Image (cartoon, rainbow, N blue to C red):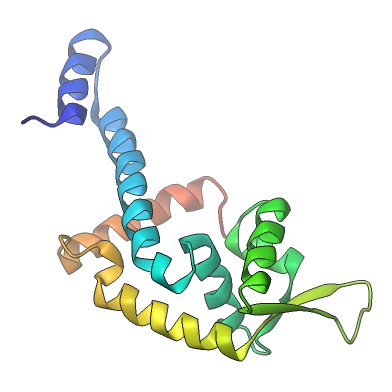
Length: 160
């Protein structure tokens, strides 16, 4: 057995030059695939994907348990179509409901239901119990990784 990313980095270094950045980016992309697969498998028994879980968590963290769909998209940094799709599926499952904003009748909010709160709690327990599928990562390494990724996001203008 060998690491295909390490092999690609060796070839890259021989043919192109410094392989550090290529190796890191390729590893991040592969780890993203691995984590999403493991997390979605963990959340499947709850009728959730990670993107839908994030919507429920965001609603739970909001003061009123409800947010306009446009704000959900901005907070989760996803396209409005993705938000609509997630809300449609969460609503069909009974985890959220669409309600007209009391202060602006043109705006529709997604509101967490009692059933949504219950499934969010169970799903969160499962994720926490699995350390968000980072069980092989030491806490100090996780902190360093988070900081490094935050630096990249900040430099890209992801946040101020």
